[in-house]
Amino acid sequence: MRLTALAGLALAVTLAALLVGGTMLPPEAILRALVRPRGDVATIVWQLRLPRLCIGLVVGASLAIAGALLQGMLRNPLVDPYLTGVSAGAAVAIVIAMSAGIAIGAVPALGFGAGIATALLVAALARRGTGLDATRLILAGVSLSSLFAAVIALVLTRLQSTEAAPAIVGWLAGSLAGRGWSDLGFSVPYAAAGTAIALFSVPALNALRLGDVRAQAAGVNVDRAQWLILAAASLLTACAVTLSGTIGFVGLIVPHVARRVVGSDARLLILASALLGGALTVAADAVARTVIAPAEIPIGVLLAFIGVPAFLYLYLHGRTMAV
Amino acid sequence: MIAAHELRLFAGSRLLFGELDFAIRGGEFVAILGPNGVGKTTLLRTLAGAHHPTGGSVTVDGQSLTELPHADRARLIAYVASDDLFVNYLSVRSIVATGRYAHHRWWQWHEDATDGAAIDRALADVRMEDFASRSFDTLSSGERQRVWLALALTQEAPLLLLDEPTSHLDVHVAQDVLALLRAQTLQRGKTIVCVLHDVNEAAQFADRILLLADRRILAFAEPEVILAPPFLEAAYGVAMDRLRTPAGDLRVLPSV
Image (cartoon, rainbow over all chains, first blue to last red; front, side):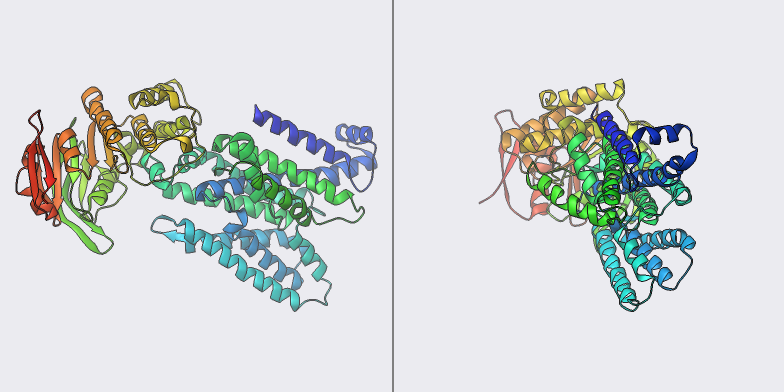
């Protein structure tokens, strides 16, 4: 029921976002172009707005699912998808590549590979016996991310004068601008794989709400479940980061809001997080590309400006949220 | 039902037991007693498959425990740990429903009629039917312990392992929990192995007591034997006074 309402919200937001943009177009022309893809309006709709909408949905849903997975697995409400090290690793690789002048076309694959490699490193550091140690995972994720942030700062200070700097800063702030169907085509298989693993892990995730010991007693292979959940979160985060750069707060905040709407049952929470994450990202992007058009606000900045106060309000006014 | 063969257990680098051998019969209520630090919890975790022995093996109905997949093991053994995990804001029913995990196929997300019946029966057995929709954080300690018990019963495993199910409970609640367990052996044919602190609780409810001390089994026998000199003195190192209840059962008190 509530899930249906969320699906309705996501659909409404997507439609509304389709209708607004840097060039104001009459709604009926846009809808006509959807059905009959011919002419200038159709080019804007099919080559600019639709891919951007789809990317927004995929990025938002991926980050939100990854956040819900990790928060549930670690039973820690402060965890976000960047804990996997994926975004820090991708950012370092991409910043170095851009400053070295490597072709822009190679950037997504490079970022994706570096992100997954960093996630593997974090996982290796967090390994204990056959399973994962929650505290070690958090420590490894946080410290590697800080290290990589330092590397990025170093590269940027050495680079101030060259023309690559604006592109790098733009990427780091997160943006859905200038991406097309081919970027989506590269990332979607990984997001789909991550989502499939996430859905497979749903019953284990529910049992893990009772703690590792009781989940194990109920028959969950806790070690295996943790590896699968971490793999799913890493794939989803890598997909999002490759598509949009570092967009913060979606992966942290959306699972909290979703938990308020549908509760902590993973069967509902994963789907609700995906819908809300997609809707929020698409809505934020619509605002980001219209308010100061033809210029754009980086969506990561916008989400932080709106998202953080809203989140603090939610968190402080209302009952404490269960993870 | 469940048996230990030449079990060798360590806590870190400290040897707990060099070689333990015992067998527990189906339908029995066995209490594990012994001084703090002797390794009661580690032994119970080993029987539950949550701790891997350094040497020896545990068999359940002749099958080696380490060779059983997690879900198969959970359908044979329900283990109630003693950790005081606080699962706020989860409803009693959603906690208890977790016990059905091992009965589901990997694609099954939702409870079927069999699950519902198992959950209802478990809640009824611990008299928590009226608490199904209550949030865990609103429950008393005794009610919480009964929820953990219901979670274990929902697994429908023939063997129940419990680590200190009566710790932190007032005497009437502790009696109630142990009576519920006793009823599980009598009415549902369950086998129960239970780590306890209170010698008299063990004597009152258990068929046999496994008394551990000095890295070995000091005695594994009926309460009348265990409570008679010299076993408790040897295990705990304190002198004991003995008295008889009006019903003629033996009880002990540390001597002043």
